[in-house]
Length: 304
Ligand SMILES: Cc1cc2nc3c(=O)[nH]c(=O)nc-3n(C[C@H](O)[C@H](O)[C@H](O)COP(=O)(O)OP(=O)(O)OC[C@H]3O[C@@H](n4cnc5c(N)ncnc54)[C@H](O)[C@@H]3O)c2cc1C
Image 1 (cartoon, rainbow, N blue to C red):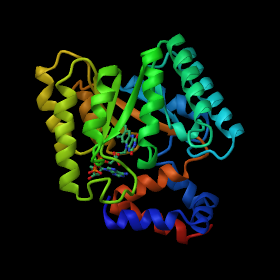
Image 2: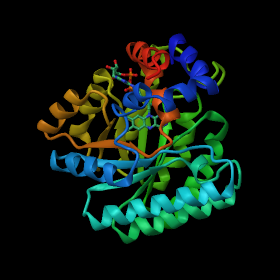
Image 3: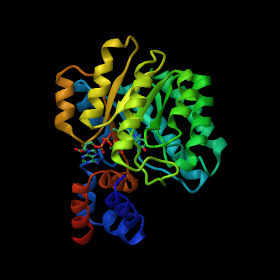
Image 4: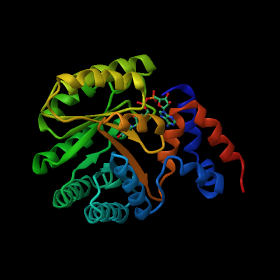
């Protein structure tokens, strides 16, 4: 992440800025570019539209780092309702969860049991569960909880971050478990001893990990990027693959590219976030792209 992005994340973590963005119309309007809506119904409508265009979806009921068991249980129940809706509407989609939203860090056992329950319900409606990767202080715990659930149920997948020095080693543990492995660059501000800092280093690591994943037919690589150079590397490896694979992109980001890829018949999954807890997700999307920062600051400064 560049210095502007880091600065932006530092500013947006202040409660004053959070209140201005979440409490004003321009701030909420900004969220609609990247978030499907605040309700499950709105997310389902967006998912249906994406399916109609030929994309699969991953529904993310936004939330992270809950502070009590009640919130963690409510998040699990929201995801169970989301899985039921996927079944009822016959959607071609799965769910994406953050373990800190299910209570990891507060009560790790609760998070593990909830992930089991989600995997069971997902199996009942014929779909899968993706686990997002969060900050580096929970990488090991996330892999442990994911691995236990994947061994028991076999219908999960995990995100890995190319910017972490440790990711290649982590894949030694993750890939033998099968499932889908979502490769992304990484969205958090991490220190230099843990993560590559320069764009070139992150891109090089991403391409190396793409080769590793696309070279193993036992896993389903999900190449999650809007960077055409990264996508071209993955595309160059498709011909030698007999296992499944897909590309993944975020709702509202490079929609023109998404349409071009769908028109070309590329397998594309769109990550569709929804819910009232959209603020931290929005700040990460803002920080990824300097051009978004001016939008953000305008929204922060104009109260209506
Ligand atoms: C499906 C999916 C799931 C993800 N899951 C995780 C996860 O679990 N954990 C995690 O840490 N990160 C996750 N990420 C975020 C990821 O780590 C990156 O921060 C993000 O995808 C930007 O990197 P990029 O590969 O698109 O490349 P970049 O070089 O950042 O972007 C390439 C181009 O895409 C466009 N673009 C990218 N981001 C934006 C934006 N926010 N607004 C407008 N245009 C933009 C720009 O044109 C940019 O030049 C996920 C990303 C995707 C696509």
